[in-house]
Amino acid sequence: MFARDGAKVYASARREERLASLATELAAEGFPIVYGVSDAGTHESMEALAADAVAKLGGVDVVVYVTGTNTPDRALTRLTREIWNELIEVNLNGAFSLSSALLPAMREAKKGHFIYVGSISGKYADVSGAAYQASKRGLFGLALAIRQEERQHGIRTCVICPGLVDTELMEKRPVKPDAETLSKALQPEDVAEMIFGVAKLHPRAAVPELEIWPTVI
Image (cartoon, rainbow, N blue to C red; front, side, top):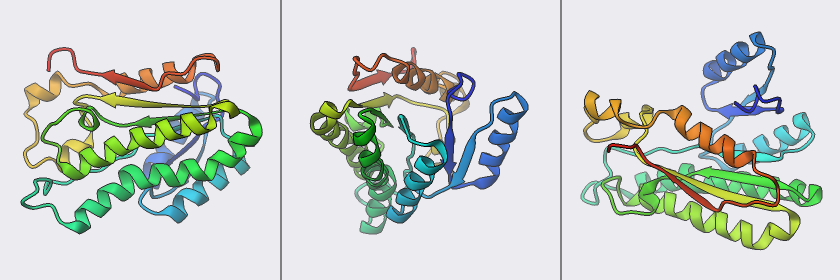
């Protein structure tokens, strides 16, 4: 959506083949993007990603952190410290590492917008597990602190909180939802449209938080 709207886009994920496929698809439409492989679970990878994006784009105006994992072993009777740490590293610490690495350039430019994809699990009790809920709740603290401390530099934050979305994260559930339930779930493009709308707002407007739910679930 960003590329087709004329933005310079840097896409990043762990699986290079998917990034290459996306780049090929958009290039065929006349919308080239830059991409690089990174792992949200490591601080060094997020720092390298930030540096590469700033170097290749000449600066970063909007960051969309849509990264998350969970585990089938989410119940407190099965949750281990190792699993807890993995979820916190990917879902929360990666957001901090990337944000802190990009803030200096944004301060200098006097503008910037961090959009974090959280979850309704970070707001309401559910069965997603303690580690997942804690990590997604932590995004609120990070986003609110950045907004409070950096708004004089023109830097904004938003946490998007989706309900059930039909993505590969469903494979991390102890029991995957049935086909009928998934047919009523949100699709990734529903969340993407909300992200895109927030990013397109005039710089004078800040939306700290938004929820998006399936209509009938």
